Length: 273
Image (cartoon, rainbow, N blue to C red; front, top):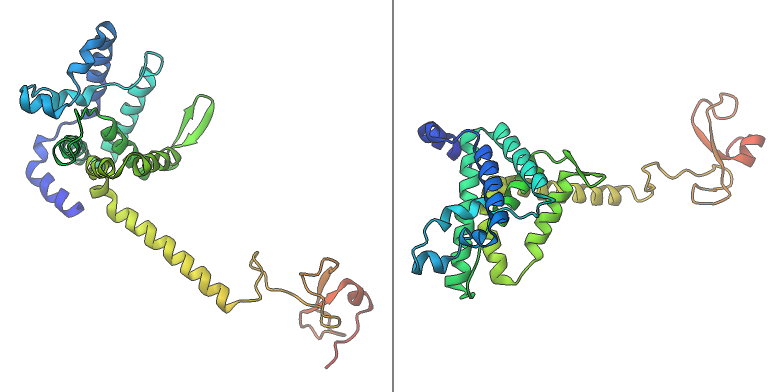
């Protein structure tokens, strides 16, 4: 994917839209103000395949990108978070790669609406930019997992928001809706599919190594320290009354680390040969 993007950027990079997030935030804020003044205005912007195809309302293919999701009390936070996520991704990737990611998500959302309406015959499919914004959040959480935001009064790392969002996308709806969601967030899968596979393979490798260590070290405790036993009475770390000591004296132990329980450490007898 990276090689393909590099080739595309060399050829089409001059057409990239710098600071795309600024336009998205500004137009979303404008739509919020207009919809607050006239609530029916918002319905004219949502993407409805039936209205686009049968009634030629082609503007909906673009205007659904600017539909806000918050009330008047949360719109500032929504716009700030969109600005933060978009600018961070563009700063990490560059304008061209971010533009490709965003518009692939927009195309995926449109395709998901047509899949639900044409393939699965869902009645009157209505799409906004929710899945597209979710894909932005997932990308941000993948690249900046330890970034903290303040939810009400609690700091939360964005990776937990990403995991929660991903879980909601996977488990919500029936099978056709899940297929449509997968298409809608296909931009994330294209950009980060290799990374996710690497994480899964790494987790499987760690689990396999832990299993091997457990097989080769059956007497090793969970803490990683080998089980000790008194050389005279045989008490081990598992005995609740055991208080084991290690001695390296020259007179009895000849400088070799030798384990005694507390009672035999005091008497300090020579271990039986």
